[in-house]
Length: 336
Image (cartoon, rainbow, N blue to C red):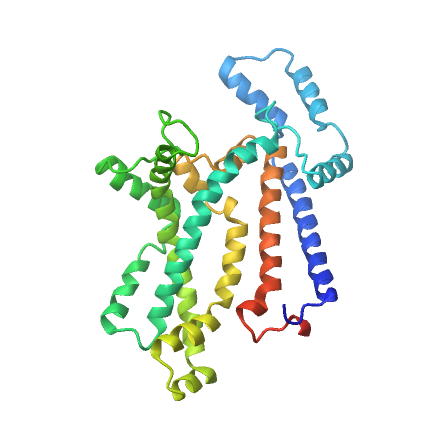
């Protein structure tokens, strides 16, 4: 990779570690600033189901002792850092005896399978639409029709999800609206299960694609307008290059770099980006798990999920930072 030096790698890796440490510290502090604590929340849930709970004070004390919540904050913080670094997140406070790692491993593949694919589809479609909207060579009928594909941009994804459920599930009865698959289908790598999962993912994925596509299109349109006036575009036209080659090799290639940066961050933070969408569709993803952890004041589960989100964003930014010269040869890491 052109211009990549040991000093640059060390600097970027140091920023990577610092970002993760600051994120871990923040997610340790914020839940403890909220009103209430996980033991009181657990006791409240038990009382709501079975009436009065005898010896509640003793139960709370034992629960705090079991999870180390009675220790001073600095002791909890050091233990939390060690457990997180060693990828031993411990037990979930609200789903004991399930561990945080088990809960995340169960739900993370669902979120990756749904939201990563939906984000990539919206990225490709949105950038293509935005580039065509800005390109002077786009036929006028096509250019006049493209803005209609962005009408859902200003609608929140969860509200669009409710609309899609009403149209395609409740009215037309074409697609399922809840869960990740039908209970009558046996999970496994078989065509029946895969197709069933795909049918359940269509509506939540469509809600994400229709909403996110507009933001990608508007961003790409602005970048293409800027690129279209650059000297290299004038030179390409003067050399007699075809409109298609100028569009893709000179226009899109130079305009898409900021979009690729945003894509990396979006994919890295995707687990927490559409929590309400997963809730609306009762989708068994990590967003729904995060929502329940917030409701239950489950410190350990909340910290575990957000930790993986932070690591995902940091890794995405690091990879993009190191691969910029491959995307745009004008950039040299040696100059940094």
